[in-house]
Image: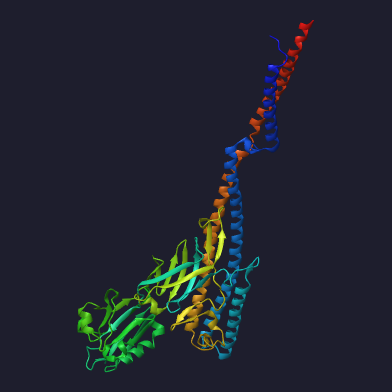
Length: 520
């Protein structure tokens, strides 16, 4: 039958040709842009996943840039610390030279003191001026801020890292569970007549962390004179002596100057009887860290019977043991070290707090501060690194506890009302040496910590992000980029179909015109 109102073959040809032309347009668009996905309709699921990967790519790329910038900050900081280390070493040289008083005049020591003063001022100047892009590095601006530190319990706090997860501040609780102890030996004074005096000439070998010395005490001397003889050699042995309860009748105690497992005291009587039980000069140590009750006279018999005191010639000290936020910290004498991803710090406890576990927990707060580095593509605590960079001003480094007073490097300067004893013009260089040694160690540790952070955190993180960037880029390419081989093949197919479709449409339109032949 021949109908002209509806040309069905033509309609079919038009529909197919429209689809072919649409496909041809897609192929041309992909080949011109190089992308398989140019709009959401091209691949809805592919758009979703590729956009997420592209967001990760931007974050990873910025993370790499952040790491490079952080490395620049660390390198600048380390360069300044290197200069400070050189200045501290020059001070050490001047201090050692000044200690040679037998070959140096007072004028030479005064000249050395001027150089020391200048070097200390330079250290503080470097602390105040070291910066990166306007960011102060060593003046304490990158240190953590503390609040509520009870100085009667915690003498010094140095926070190395702290993570504030969903908190504006971090509470730190310090609870001493086992006391710090010196090495200590108790001497019985009740085995002689009269009590508290030497029964015969006595030669003692006193050994401590600093060295060994021998003293000889004549017969009939009060043990208070033994105390004086031991204390005159404390700087050589590291051992000091004192009367128990301040009474010669109660005996005396030999103890190390410092606390901790590295401290010890050894007292031996040379030339005494082979059986120590027959010796009038007997020393005892505390068993298992038990407390020693006081009493005048000292209750020797009761303590020995109870097993509190046992016969010994040597005793070692004990490191403090404490819980910091419920975790057992590492003790070193009266110092504590905490090292975790959430909190890292060094604490210097006071002697009273470190030696008395019955005292209440000491708490303080870290209220902010520190240097925060964003190292990953997501802003989260897991992809951030925190590090505290303390001030290296002379008034903040070298903190050393001397006679319950905390001294710093600035006390080595002349004219300091609280630190005159630590200047080289005073003549006693041991305290100055201890403070300077601590300052050198602190700067060296800070340099090492920053170096470890750069090497083990920043550099490894950058390499990891670069690898992630390569893999993510490859993944996006697979999803979004056009395959030119396939697209050119499809373009050729579409071109052929478009050409044949046009010819078919022409034939379909011509078929309707054949109806005119029926009209004659």
